[in-house]
Length: 224
Image (cartoon, rainbow, N blue to C red):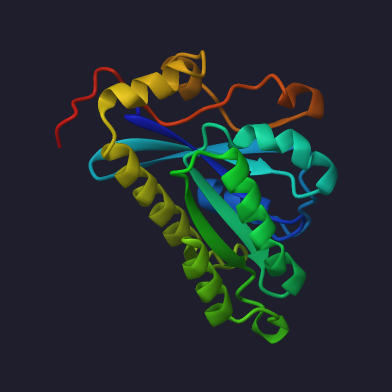
């Protein structure tokens, strides 16, 4: 069955906060205890049904290491959603969230939907960031907020689906012509986007990979 939409989402945040683990839990329901820091960029996909539409989430895991941030800034273009992750047991990763928000606003579309995620919520004994404090920050910045645990899977599905639902609501309010123009601006056809599969890319390959954004099939009816 063909997808009605492809949504590009970037998962951002400091290194070792669990971005890759959250992505793996949502796309494959997997968790690896020996996971290593992401080098460069990798992405995974998952297709879900939202409001009677087939939506393919193409989720990009951007490296948190400082030396890659200049490279990954190019990947904000075309992204309709972002998952900003911090570690509830490492306060400095939460304190850096404001900087990540500033970077998003500098490089991403102004209508991007952002979900702030406090990962490792299962580690209650080591908590360094209160949920109320994070929720207040999210409200101040205009972000959605949730805590989750990639290890247990708690709230991971709910957080990603909420993000996709909000993106879908934004895209559904756009005229069909605007969506087509967005797709044409990439210089790639819809079929190319839908053929992408999850993979890990080397640093050299990153600069030539396509940028993707919301795409609706030309044959899709605009009515619902």
